[in-house]
Length: 320
Image (tube, rainbow, N blue to C red):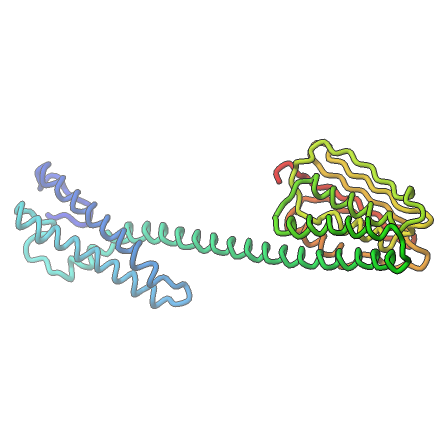
């Protein structure tokens, strides 16, 4: 009788010999496991090329058989006088008989290695998605800044042309806004207090050119001014109201609150008589894209009718 693979017959071995054979089997499996894990799978596993997988499997099996043959039939026989197979067993018989025993360590190491590879690929994919998202956000914010400056400069030009004494305060207010935007647009998030500061400055700047500034109704109820928000996220809506709204006859209504750390931004403005088409310009389209990326659970309701334009936005800022 003899031992085939791991099916060792204790009756023909002493406890000491039996333990030695078991140890050599586990050593062989250990060596084969890491050889397959470190070298074979990373090099030969290609699901589109079956022949490479077969080559890799053959190499791993050969490694297992050679290591086990060397330990069982050379080292053990030399040092302990025992063997796992009877004298005269041909090597090819030994080889094919041990293919079965090599499968376990090869299969387990392959599973572990593939899990590691695909986890790494998934991490790289997520990193690429994150880099793409950041690049897109940076591009969108870059688009907002010139758009904002262009609208404001038009207003100041009008005041200067009219030789209005309001021109100098307007320029000072713009300088303040530019200092904010130049610094804070580089940040991923700013405090809610700063974002509302933009809106306050913009509103005061626009009021300088209005005959009836009292028609601009702003109501704020901010309990958590230090909550974070993406910069220039709310400003485009206010810009849009000043650009397309009927500021001479009806003005607009703006409400901002953060009850339970949920930002609620509401704006209602009435369109000019000549402005009956949609007023969702570049700035608002950019805001929509940024909201989809940064705040996927946001609630945005825009009503764009012939006479009025309404924005109702809710963002949960608890985890931002």
